[in-house]
Length: 227
Image (spheres, rainbow, N blue to C red):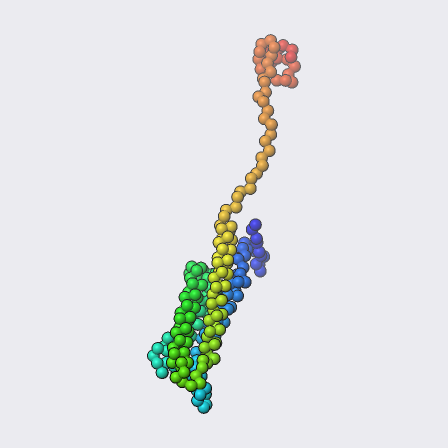
């Protein structure tokens, strides 16, 4: 059904048909993924290792760990992947729905960055456990950054899964609406009332000379016979 709207000058224009609504699951997934990515980035500014055996307590952040061993360079991937998770999650809603690339690109990119963050965090925790938690250093324990990164990773994983499911539902709704809008409207069938056909009229003729005559004539104009 065509919709119309009037502008400020009173002119009538075709109203743009409403697009599909963004599913709440997609919005929830993006929200969790963005919060998770932000927490992963924030973990860089908190200590990953606390040496409680020292007075005062020594807190080791990413730069301190990198100075002790080059293996901790992988920790630089943690904030980088967190930023990408947050950015790709937002693009999946605002950019993906506007045609910025294929619909599967941004959710898939979010999952790839999430896998990168998982690898970087697991390797970092494994090396910290090996270097500081094996009893060689007294009073060493994981700092707040490890728990912030782990919690952010859980939110990012949950958000990515929900976002993929919500994006699939959103894509299916877009396809259905697009197919309906592109389908040409069937022309209305007009019912034509057929009038009964009259049979051919028989020409009246004069009974005497067989000349054609009309029904309202009283005499034949040829022979003068009375009709």
